[in-house]
Each structure stands twice: as C-alpha cells, then as structure tokens.
Image 1 (cartoon, rainbow, N blue to C red):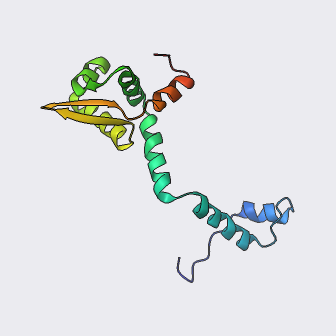
Image 2: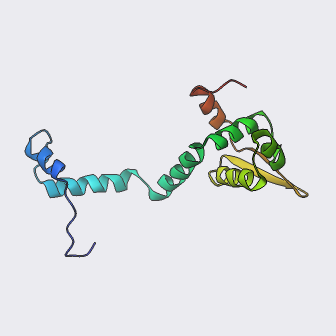
Image 3: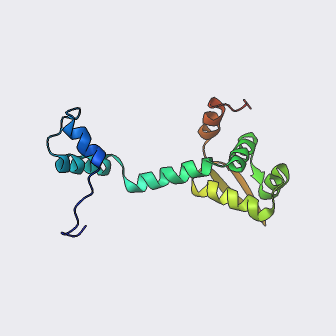
Length: 133
C-alpha cells in the first residue's frame, strides 16, 4: 500500500462502532486490528494447502474415487472402468487428489496404481453420510 492509499473502512463497521455495540473507539484503528488478526491466525501457505484440499473434496467424481480407493489400491484403468471415465479425465482427477495429498501413486512398469494417503478422509466422508465399508 502506498502512502496516498488509505485502507478502506466499511460503512457498516463505522456504523457498528458508532452504535456502541462494538467497544472500539477509533474505527480506523479497529479496522487495522481486524486486518492484523487475520495475519496472525491465517498463515497464507497453510490456507492455500487447505483450499487445495477442500477444492479436491468438492467434486462428486473425486469423492467416488476416494471411496473406491478406500476398498483397495487401484490402477488408473480400473478407476476409468468403475466410473466410466476417459483416461485423461481419470488421470486429471487423480492428479488433483494427489496434489491435495489425499492419494499417493506408485508405478509398476507402465502401470500406475493409486491408494489413499490417509484413511481418515474416508472415515470423515462416512461420518457425513457415506456408507460403511
């Protein structure tokens, strides 16, 4: 932020402070404190990792893949057949899951097998409405 730029202060925050509901006396100072709070509690690297994780979990196909891998390790071609996907689509979804550290891969010759990185993710899925395996 340059010297000429002033942090934006919400009109709602201004009204909140003026209403005496909020104990702050100086709106600008309070706004700065709120922004500082975010920096203290939210490490950008951690938030980025968490965002990647939740984006990976926000897709039906990827949730189905995780459910399959909870049963056993599978080759890409098995995932393709089970979910009626093309090879590029299956690989795309598996790549997203791998980047989010939800699955791991191992190569055996020309075959790539995938398995869960941590079974806790599927336990969590079952807890929120999935079937027991």
